[in-house]
Amino acid sequence: MAKKSSVEKNEHRRKLVKSYAGRRSRLKALVSNKELPIEERFAAVLKLAELPRNSAKVRIRNRCEITGRPRAYYRKMKMSRIALRELGSQGQIPGLVKSSW
Image 1 (spheres, helix red, strand yellow):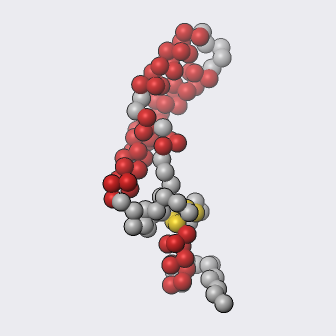
Image 2 (cartoon, rainbow, N blue to C red):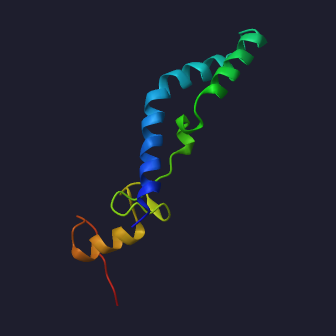
Image 3 (cartoon, rainbow, N blue to C red):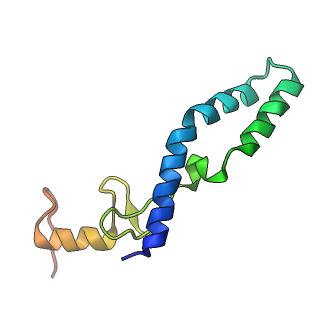
């Protein structure tokens, strides 16, 4: 099991991303608009820099929903390889055939 603080920190980041998503996308649109004067675009860059760093989507770490493990994460299943293997051995994942020889 991952540290509780790491999992909670990641959840806090998810909330921040959700709350700042609209503002961030509007500012990014202004920055990338080549028709605006350079002063306006630069002001938008400065406003974007003032937003919390953890409100950027790239700061979110994919973690296993069962154990919180950050590595060896399968996006389709939303879990780590270890949790997938355990649930597969117990027969709790439909369509997964686990063989050992």
